[in-house]
Length: 98
Image (cartoon, rainbow, N blue to C red):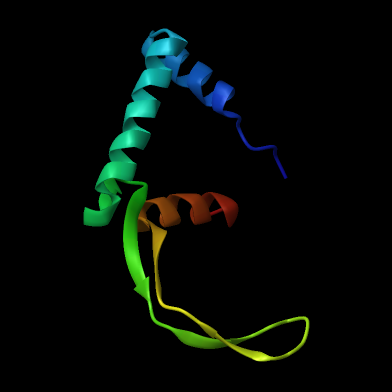
C-alpha cells in the first residue's frame, strides 16, 4: 500500500499546480479548515468530496470490556464526515480496477 501524502506534499502539489507560493496555499487550507469548523453545525459541504455533519447519539447501554459490567453511555453530539457519492465512485472504481 502506498504511503499517505503529508501536509507538506499536498501544499507543494497545489503550489506547483496553480503557480502559487506554498505560504499562500497553506493560508487557503487554514481558512478552509477554520470555515469548516465554524460551519459544521449547519453542515459543511466540500463539493465532490463530502460533508461534515453534527449527529446526536442517543444514550445507550454498553459493556466495560475489562469486567463485562453493563454501563450507561450518555447521549452526546458527534461530528461525522459523509463521503459524497462521486468520491466513493471515483475511489472505488480505481481500487477495483474498473
